[in-house]
Length: 327
Ligand SMILES: Cc1cc2nc3c(=O)[nH]c(=O)nc-3n(C[C@H](O)[C@H](O)[C@H](O)COP(=O)(O)O)c2cc1C
Image (tube, rainbow, N blue to C red):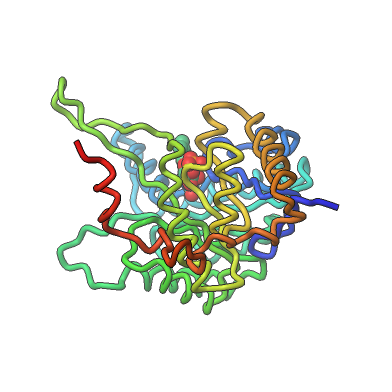
């Protein structure tokens, strides 16, 4: 009997397609539709602490009677958190798949009580995203990595549900960080979160937003690091996020070592039907390649794989590749 069931971060999934955190998952109604379309799990839109601070600043700027400061921030935080817990409860009522809450941690202090309430509201897991640029001239090497471990430890102390760490791609050595996160009890990692894309408009000579969505080409980065990390930190849960646009992307992710994929851009661009296209395509590929289940090929092409002694995930310089493009 062939099956596309999988397990990620201790969660049993009917297939590897998780809808990743974004406005796609910011209401129970949308999550119900994603579930009906075949999603195996949803990661709710992140509650962003930074956004709450910006909202408070906006209220202060627009209304002279609003006196901001810590009280207002605390009030807004409480208010937004309550809204978030309601979304978790409402989603749980209408879906029969795991519901993963998402915390965008910006400051280590506030999130601990939040995490506990997320668990109490019925979330099946928590995904922590600590996406931030590191630009300080006084930056101490490893400080950002240590922040991940500190936040994980704080949350781990108060919840029993699995904790998933969604990493940015701005680490020198994600493998070492993943090894540490595992040692400190993270149930799995997602490679990678995506920075807000920026661009420059040369006609207006001003900064502007870049393209919001990924393309298939973006998958390469996560394939490399999942391939390397899944070999080094074996028997661990990896999900790929970033550039999974079709069934081929799902198959490649699993071959590199992922147990699941988190999909966002493809659903924004082509609708919920993409989920079934992906699961159908995955099943078809497994039939053609006589794979009975995900475990049979997960990590088959990770860093341990060699083709004539070479593993391309380890390659950094182009070398011979340039030779093929002689003018
Ligand atoms: C409009 C938009 C909103 C997003 N919001 C969040 C968010 O709230 N939290 C988060 O962790 N990632 C967020 N992301 C990142 C996605 O979850 C995902 O990791 C990223 O887009 C890469 O996956 P993709 O190639 O399937 O788009 C957002 C992405 C987009 C395009």
